[in-house]
Length: 357
Image (cartoon, rainbow, N blue to C red; front, top):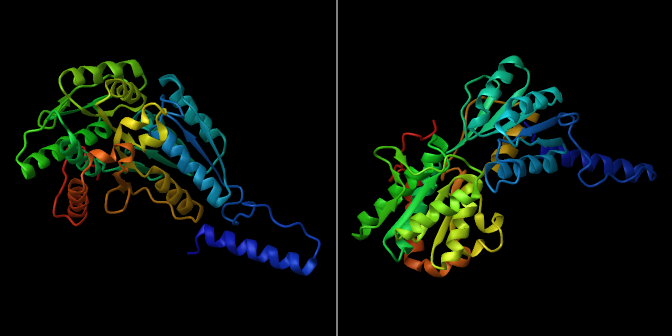
């Protein structure tokens, strides 16, 4: 089936040919040509209570929908939730727009998405970081444990104190999946190098650890991170949305502590003063997943089968080391590249009770 991009190019070529013959019609505006399928198509996104610019998955999901708008010439908009009471009404508002595609973000929106999907079987939904089992809902999930495994190995390789740490916003599978991969990566480094790097904040065995209880309170992030710093941790991975900004602030003030960001590249999204402390970020390629799913829906190719981002399909990975690259020796960087390849080819299997299926 011809892709929307190719049909857009074909439409532009046809318009230009007609212009050459007629000599009087105006030239098409940049991005103004759309396919017949995309004509009249619109999509809406509903954020969770973290808001649109959360430096996390709301922001990445919206960037994906904006890319889809640019690529396919469709109408998109975001409906921003600021409290939990906004969630269900906002999904209803999205449906009431009459758009063909509704994107919701986060586990908080699972119930509202499921309810609206059942009431509106002709509307197609997708939900990020959660699984809703319905014929018109496509889950967009990521095996972040694979990339976090690399980040944990990296953290163990650069620590000077022999102690690293992680904490979450809440004890939920999309959060603990990161944490499981991180501690296993540290453990693998210890096995390979005969070291004894400790990980504070999470026990994979008991599936319990340190959580702030929310994803918005930056002051909690700073307080929790400072507690880990006081215990000797010099690399910290917060899995807590905006709360992680507080951890980055504590790291910046310490002068010696590094942060592993999650969801998107913290070096690009965090405040300027925090960027130099970002060792790497565990990336979820939400943007491209959203573009592909919207493009398929425009083409009439929608499936409720989950999209699962992995290292193999470039759905997850770790970001460059940026200003912290001096901490990462060539040998360690090569080990991480080899580790990535081993996970991709199945030589190493990263497991977690929260692994998406």
